[in-house]
Image 1: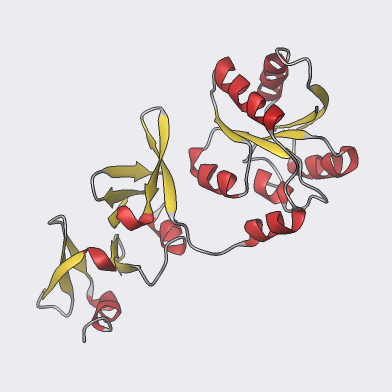
Image 2: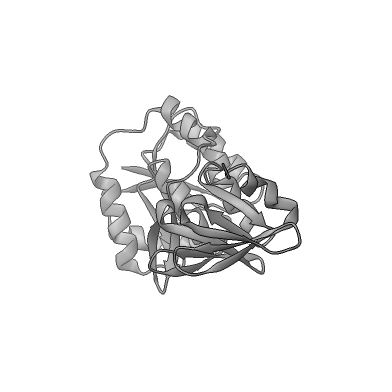
Length: 240
Protein backbone atom coordinates (compact mmCIF):
# COMPACT_ATOMS: atom_id res chain seq x y z
CA UNK A 1 0.00 0.00 0.00
CA UNK A 2 1.43 3.39 -1.05
CA UNK A 3 0.86 6.17 1.45
CA UNK A 4 1.24 9.95 1.67
CA UNK A 5 1.56 11.96 4.90
CA UNK A 6 0.04 15.46 4.92
CA UNK A 7 0.52 17.64 8.01
CA UNK A 8 1.91 21.12 8.58
CA UNK A 9 3.71 19.97 11.76
CA UNK A 10 7.06 18.18 11.12
CA UNK A 11 6.84 16.33 14.45
CA UNK A 12 3.41 15.00 13.54
CA UNK A 13 4.71 13.70 10.21
CA UNK A 14 7.69 12.14 11.97
CA UNK A 15 5.42 10.36 14.47
CA UNK A 16 3.32 8.86 11.67
CA UNK A 17 6.48 7.57 9.96
CA UNK A 18 7.64 6.09 13.26
CA UNK A 19 4.34 4.30 13.86
CA UNK A 20 4.21 3.08 10.25
CA UNK A 21 7.43 1.16 10.89
CA UNK A 22 5.15 -1.50 12.37
CA UNK A 23 3.55 -1.95 8.94
CA UNK A 24 6.15 -3.00 6.34
CA UNK A 25 3.34 -3.54 3.82
CA UNK A 26 2.88 0.26 3.66
CA UNK A 27 5.34 2.34 1.64
CA UNK A 28 5.52 6.08 2.41
CA UNK A 29 5.88 7.94 -0.89
CA UNK A 30 6.58 11.38 0.53
CA UNK A 31 5.30 14.08 2.87
CA UNK A 32 3.51 17.40 2.35
CA UNK A 33 3.34 20.33 4.76
CA UNK A 34 0.43 22.24 3.23
CA UNK A 35 -2.78 21.71 1.32
CA UNK A 36 -1.72 22.99 -2.09
CA UNK A 37 1.27 20.65 -2.32
CA UNK A 38 -0.93 17.83 -1.07
CA UNK A 39 -3.36 18.31 -3.97
CA UNK A 40 -0.55 18.29 -6.55
CA UNK A 41 1.16 15.27 -5.02
CA UNK A 42 -1.99 13.18 -4.55
CA UNK A 43 -3.16 13.83 -8.11
CA UNK A 44 0.31 13.05 -9.49
CA UNK A 45 1.27 10.04 -7.34
CA UNK A 46 -2.23 8.58 -6.79
CA UNK A 47 -1.44 6.98 -3.40
CA UNK A 48 -3.64 4.28 -1.92
CA UNK A 49 -3.77 5.92 1.51
CA UNK A 50 -3.41 9.50 2.78
CA UNK A 51 -2.86 10.56 6.38
CA UNK A 52 -4.46 14.00 6.30
CA UNK A 53 -4.45 16.87 8.77
CA UNK A 54 -7.51 19.15 8.81
CA UNK A 55 -6.27 22.60 9.82
CA UNK A 56 -3.36 23.61 7.56
CA UNK A 57 -2.05 26.74 5.84
CA UNK A 58 -3.70 27.47 2.51
CA UNK A 59 -6.17 24.65 1.95
CA UNK A 60 -7.76 22.72 4.79
CA UNK A 61 -7.89 18.94 4.67
CA UNK A 62 -11.49 19.00 3.45
CA UNK A 63 -10.64 21.58 0.79
CA UNK A 64 -7.81 19.33 -0.39
CA UNK A 65 -10.30 16.53 -0.96
CA UNK A 66 -12.46 18.82 -3.06
CA UNK A 67 -9.58 19.32 -5.54
CA UNK A 68 -8.66 15.69 -6.13
CA UNK A 69 -9.00 13.82 -9.41
CA UNK A 70 -9.57 10.53 -7.58
CA UNK A 71 -10.17 9.45 -4.02
CA UNK A 72 -7.66 7.42 -1.98
CA UNK A 73 -8.46 5.99 1.44
CA UNK A 74 -8.27 8.80 4.01
CA UNK A 75 -7.21 8.70 7.65
CA UNK A 76 -7.66 12.11 9.24
CA UNK A 77 -5.13 13.08 11.89
CA UNK A 78 -6.01 16.26 13.76
CA UNK A 79 -6.21 17.96 17.13
CA UNK A 80 -9.82 19.05 16.53
CA UNK A 81 -12.73 16.74 17.34
CA UNK A 82 -15.39 19.04 15.84
CA UNK A 83 -14.75 17.77 12.30
CA UNK A 84 -15.25 14.09 13.14
CA UNK A 85 -18.83 13.78 11.95
CA UNK A 86 -18.05 15.43 8.62
CA UNK A 87 -15.08 13.07 8.17
CA UNK A 88 -17.25 9.99 8.64
CA UNK A 89 -19.97 11.41 6.40
CA UNK A 90 -17.46 11.40 3.54
CA UNK A 91 -16.45 7.83 4.37
CA UNK A 92 -13.04 8.46 5.87
CA UNK A 93 -11.39 5.24 7.01
CA UNK A 94 -10.74 6.71 10.47
CA UNK A 95 -10.35 9.92 12.47
CA UNK A 96 -7.32 10.10 14.74
CA UNK A 97 -7.55 12.72 17.45
CA UNK A 98 -4.14 14.05 18.52
CA UNK A 99 -2.45 13.04 20.69
CA UNK A 100 -3.14 9.38 19.90
CA UNK A 101 -1.45 6.24 21.17
CA UNK A 102 0.46 3.82 18.97
CA UNK A 103 -2.23 1.15 19.32
CA UNK A 104 -4.96 3.61 18.30
CA UNK A 105 -2.91 4.47 15.22
CA UNK A 106 -2.43 0.77 14.45
CA UNK A 107 -6.18 0.25 14.65
CA UNK A 108 -6.73 2.94 12.02
CA UNK A 109 -4.07 1.48 9.73
CA UNK A 110 -5.54 -2.01 10.02
CA UNK A 111 -8.88 -0.57 8.91
CA UNK A 112 -7.18 1.00 5.92
CA UNK A 113 -5.56 -2.29 4.97
CA UNK A 114 -8.97 -3.93 5.06
CA UNK A 115 -10.53 -1.08 3.07
CA UNK A 116 -12.00 -2.42 -0.15
CA UNK A 117 -12.07 -0.24 -3.24
CA UNK A 118 -12.02 3.52 -3.54
CA UNK A 119 -14.88 5.94 -3.08
CA UNK A 120 -16.67 6.96 -6.26
CA UNK A 121 -15.43 10.50 -6.95
CA UNK A 122 -18.78 11.86 -8.15
CA UNK A 123 -20.61 10.73 -5.04
CA UNK A 124 -17.76 11.98 -2.87
CA UNK A 125 -17.85 15.45 -4.41
CA UNK A 126 -21.58 15.48 -3.82
CA UNK A 127 -21.03 14.75 -0.15
CA UNK A 128 -18.50 17.55 0.13
CA UNK A 129 -20.92 20.03 -1.35
CA UNK A 130 -23.98 18.87 0.57
CA UNK A 131 -25.86 21.48 2.56
CA UNK A 132 -28.39 19.04 3.97
CA UNK A 133 -28.96 19.04 7.70
CA UNK A 134 -27.38 16.56 10.10
CA UNK A 135 -29.23 13.80 11.89
CA UNK A 136 -26.61 13.49 14.62
CA UNK A 137 -23.70 15.29 16.23
CA UNK A 138 -20.55 13.79 17.69
CA UNK A 139 -19.66 15.16 21.12
CA UNK A 140 -16.78 14.53 23.49
CA UNK A 141 -17.51 12.68 26.72
CA UNK A 142 -14.25 12.35 28.63
CA UNK A 143 -11.81 10.64 26.26
CA UNK A 144 -14.61 9.27 24.07
CA UNK A 145 -16.58 10.78 21.21
CA UNK A 146 -20.23 9.72 21.18
CA UNK A 147 -23.14 10.45 18.84
CA UNK A 148 -26.17 12.48 19.90
CA UNK A 149 -29.16 12.10 17.57
CA UNK A 150 -30.82 15.40 16.68
CA UNK A 151 -34.21 13.80 17.34
CA UNK A 152 -33.13 13.50 21.00
CA UNK A 153 -32.14 17.17 21.32
CA UNK A 154 -34.67 19.26 23.26
CA UNK A 155 -32.88 22.59 23.16
CA UNK A 156 -29.47 24.18 22.75
CA UNK A 157 -28.15 27.11 24.75
CA UNK A 158 -25.20 29.40 24.12
CA UNK A 159 -22.24 28.95 26.44
CA UNK A 160 -19.80 31.70 25.56
CA UNK A 161 -18.16 30.76 22.26
CA UNK A 162 -19.52 27.23 22.64
CA UNK A 163 -22.96 25.66 22.94
CA UNK A 164 -24.59 23.18 25.28
CA UNK A 165 -26.79 20.46 23.81
CA UNK A 166 -29.64 19.38 26.08
CA UNK A 167 -30.82 15.95 24.99
CA UNK A 168 -33.52 13.70 26.44
CA UNK A 169 -31.24 11.99 28.94
CA UNK A 170 -28.06 14.06 28.96
CA UNK A 171 -26.41 17.41 28.30
CA UNK A 172 -23.15 17.99 26.43
CA UNK A 173 -20.88 20.98 25.90
CA UNK A 174 -19.71 21.15 22.29
CA UNK A 175 -17.03 23.25 20.62
CA UNK A 176 -19.34 24.65 17.92
CA UNK A 177 -21.18 27.92 18.47
CA UNK A 178 -24.94 28.39 18.35
CA UNK A 179 -24.86 30.01 14.89
CA UNK A 180 -22.92 27.11 13.39
CA UNK A 181 -25.29 24.55 14.91
CA UNK A 182 -28.33 26.45 13.67
CA UNK A 183 -27.10 26.10 10.08
CA UNK A 184 -26.76 22.35 10.51
CA UNK A 185 -30.20 21.75 11.98
CA UNK A 186 -33.47 21.24 10.11
CA UNK A 187 -35.35 24.59 10.34
CA UNK A 188 -38.65 22.71 10.24
CA UNK A 189 -37.76 20.97 13.50
CA UNK A 190 -35.63 23.55 15.33
CA UNK A 191 -36.25 27.25 15.91
CA UNK A 192 -33.84 29.96 17.04
CA UNK A 193 -36.05 31.58 19.69
CA UNK A 194 -33.45 33.81 21.29
CA UNK A 195 -29.92 34.95 20.53
CA UNK A 196 -28.81 32.39 23.12
CA UNK A 197 -31.24 29.51 22.51
CA UNK A 198 -32.55 27.06 19.91
CA UNK A 199 -35.50 24.80 20.73
CA UNK A 200 -36.90 21.66 19.14
CA UNK A 201 -40.51 22.34 18.14
CA UNK A 202 -41.61 18.89 19.29
CA UNK A 203 -40.04 19.48 22.71
CA UNK A 204 -42.35 22.39 23.55
CA UNK A 205 -44.92 21.38 26.18
CA UNK A 206 -46.62 24.76 26.40
CA UNK A 207 -46.13 28.50 25.93
CA UNK A 208 -47.06 31.48 28.03
CA UNK A 209 -46.82 35.18 27.25
CA UNK A 210 -44.04 37.06 29.01
CA UNK A 211 -46.06 40.29 28.90
CA UNK A 212 -43.48 41.99 26.67
CA UNK A 213 -44.42 40.57 23.28
CA UNK A 214 -42.46 37.37 23.70
CA UNK A 215 -43.08 34.01 25.31
CA UNK A 216 -41.67 31.58 27.80
CA UNK A 217 -41.55 28.05 26.40
CA UNK A 218 -41.77 25.19 28.87
CA UNK A 219 -40.21 22.07 27.43
CA UNK A 220 -41.02 18.41 28.03
CA UNK A 221 -38.14 18.08 30.50
CA UNK A 222 -39.38 21.08 32.52
CA UNK A 223 -36.78 23.53 31.19
CA UNK A 224 -38.07 27.07 30.61
CA UNK A 225 -36.64 28.91 27.60
CA UNK A 226 -37.35 32.53 26.75
CA UNK A 227 -38.66 33.38 23.29
CA UNK A 228 -37.55 36.94 22.59
CA UNK A 229 -40.00 39.49 21.17
CA UNK A 230 -37.89 39.82 18.01
CA UNK A 231 -38.22 36.08 17.33
CA UNK A 232 -41.77 35.54 18.57
CA UNK A 233 -43.17 35.50 15.02
CA UNK A 234 -41.40 32.18 14.45
CA UNK A 235 -43.54 30.73 17.23
CA UNK A 236 -46.76 32.54 16.35
CA UNK A 237 -46.97 31.00 12.91
CA UNK A 238 -47.20 27.58 14.56
CA UNK A 239 -50.24 28.61 16.60
CA UNK A 240 -53.55 27.67 14.92
